[in-house]
Length: 337
Image 1 (tube, one colour):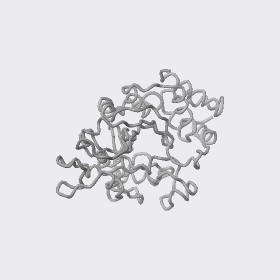
Image 2: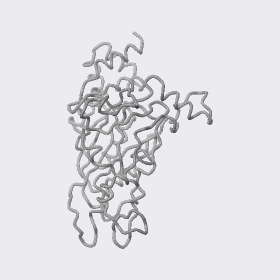
Image 3: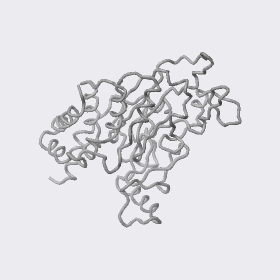
Image 4: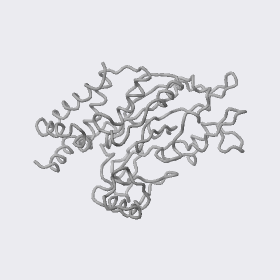
């Protein structure tokens, strides 16, 4: 059987619905239609029809009308004959070709430009010379939202008031279909925003998302509406200071060392949660297995990994059950419980 046939078989065997709607993210899409019309209405996740392959949209603010003419080259993905002057054309050709556009989860984060702390008031200002507004005010203001993937969507430890470091955050492993993709998100446990000992705890971020994008570490204050419907597994709780230190001490995965099943996004997250001392459990293993097997793009990714031949053989021989057994073996071998 040819590889293309295996892909069709895997799509048939693995493509089933999530509990809240059809398995849609990562599927081919029409840029002229909204996500609800392509995924079923209502679809609670924020999906945008974007380029796949060598293209990623460059956004400074949310813009769902990406037409493929503005993109940046991903490492190692451009055609061999694409010189520096032909990058835009090469990207657009791939974007407009078969399977070139897919519905991607595209969360928003608070713009880092508003995280300018006033040393006297410990409030977050919209600009150095303006009257201070609380972080909550800025989060509610959609004008302050950017895509988390944009340059202005990222923050660092120094952008967060130090009095927030003792605040406790719940840490979840979250997953996004169309890969699947795993990342960590911490949410503030205590919603009390009172001023205590002169510190305004309303200036502490309600959430911190930790991921890597284009082989670089990425951390941002993600808008709750864009992640609250994702599947999650609670790993544990820790102080924000410990979480930020763990993230700071973990290196991003280099493109040359990436492997979907042995050194990918889940392993980046794993290095952070292990530094925090969170237990690895059978429930965590099952969370990985379920979401990998449920995702219609898993076979496409798995066949490119170091164990790709075994992954393909497992589904040809044993169908969906065989692929699940293979994934269980890989996942269980990499967790300590």
